[in-house]
Length: 413
Image (cartoon, rainbow, N blue to C red; front, side, top):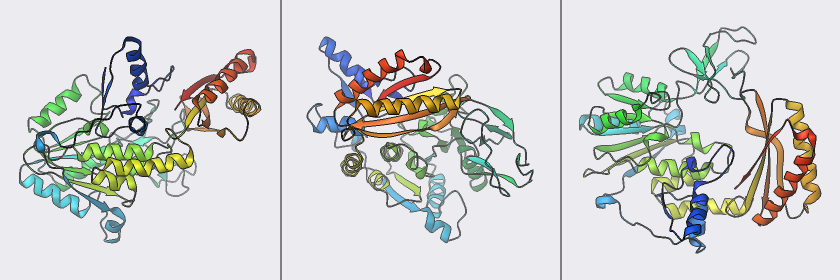
C-alpha cells in the first residue's frame, strides 16, 4: 500500500468513524503480510517519530529530481514594509521579482490560504462583526456583493448598514484570493492570471482544466489556496510568493506550526523544478518563527527538533496520546450540562495525577448549522489508559437517558 503525501490532513476523517487512513493501511497490511510505503517531503511529526523509534524504516532522498537546485528563499518582514509606508499586498521584494519574471516570460505561483475577497466584515462605529446566523463564524465577503459562510453555505447580500447601530460605516477587512487577484490586475495589467480555489473549481473538471492551461503557458501567474502547492511540477515556474504565511500559523490547533512548515515547504518546492534556478518570497509578520525559518531552508530536522520540544513540554502527540470527547446538540444548555456530567464522571474514574484534562469548552467553531459543539481533551502517556476511560464513558452514556439527545463522538490522537 502506497500513501503519497502521508502528512496531508485529508487522510484523517472528520466524520464518524474518525479514523486515519495511515493507521488503517498499516493495520490492513498486517492482516495479510503486506508492506506500507509512506511518502512525503514533509512527513507528519507522528510518522517521523515512529521512524526514529525504529517502528518504521526510514529512507531519505537527498537530491531533488533531475538534480535541480533548491530555490533561493527570502523571508520578508511585513512589519518593516509597513514602517516604510508600503500598504500594498505585495512587498517591494515580491513586486520586483514578479516584474522581472514577467519580463523574462517565466511563470509565477502565488499562495494564499484563504479564499474570498476579505476575511470578515465589521462596523467601524461599534465594532460589530457580521456573523453567520447558523454558525459561530464570520461571513466572508466576495466580489459579487455577497457575504458567504464557508461552513454551511449561507449567503446574504452585503449592505453598508450595521444591523446593531445602523451606522453606514461598514467595511470589509482582511485578505482573500479574490482581493489578491484584483490587486494583480491593477499592479500588473498585462499579466494573465489564473485564480484557483474552492470558488473557481466547483465546476466538474475545472481543476484539471486550470492546471492544464497553466502547464501549457496560457497564464503567467497561478494564484490559489493550498490546492496549488501540492505535488505539481511546472518547469517554467521560477518564482513562488507566499502572500501571508501567518494565516496557518495562528490557528487554534497544536498542529499549526507543523501545518505552516508543511505548506511553506511544499509551496517553495514548486519553484525551480526545471533548468532555470528558482526563487521564493515568504511574506510574514513573524519572520523569527521556527516553522518559517526551517521552511525557508527546507530543513525538516531543524523543524522537527523545535516542534517536538513543544510537544513534549505540553504532552501533545506523539509525546503523549490525546483523546477528544466531542459533544453536539441543538440545545445549548442541554449540551453544557451533559459535558459537565461527562467531566465529573471522567474525574471520578481517573486518578488526577495521571490524567491531564482540558475542558469542557466550546469547539474551535462553537456552532455549525444551528448545532452547538463542545469538546473535552484528555492527555496521557499510555493509550491503553485512555482506551479504558473511553470504554467506561461509553457505558455511562449508554445507561443514562439524559444523553439521548446529545451526539457524542470520540477522537484519538
